[in-house]
Length: 265
Image (cartoon, rainbow, N blue to C red; front, side, top):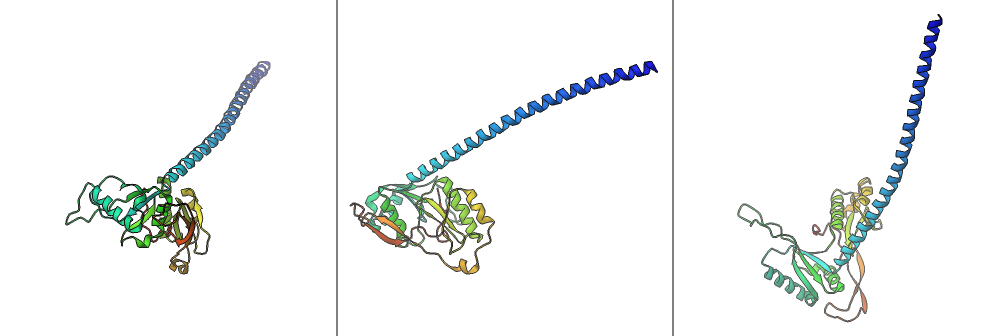
């Protein structure tokens, strides 16, 4: 009995020592885990700050690019031809509108289509023509007189890649009746969920998620073709290079996208 009790005592001592060792190891693990969690929180905060900085830089860069596009205009619908003929056609058109003298440059956007139309293939889509004006008011004059352009020819703002993607998504939502209208104004994208709603400025694609979850506009609202007027500062007449002396009430150059073609970049 004495030997058995002594053996049990030694076993208990070993078990206590083993459990103490496990307890110490567990404390060490918990301590290390707390350190890792603390470091993880620090990294999360740093990552959040970096993301915010990246977003700020991205927004600043996009705003700068759009500002550089402020005197640009895109013409859609003119058939493809030689570069010389394109320029002559556009300049003749701009001359009829009185702003040909304000053109800095113009050319087609994107690579020239490789394939030519045949009897079995349709005419490839013509590339848009970008026009850079020397004066912002001349660009606005064209956008405000879209109705004076030849049939099948459309004028749109020159948007950045980011804003073009936003407009395309808004156009898709308009097609699915999640939006009543979407349009651009001075390089920014605006949408309306319903006709009576105030325009909402869209900064990012995620801003459109709210409208994806909203009920569609009513049939009566969809039947209304929205037409808005805006005050656009005009530096005199198109050919007048004098100071800004008047503000005209012009037809809106920011037609809802239901009337506009796809916006190219």
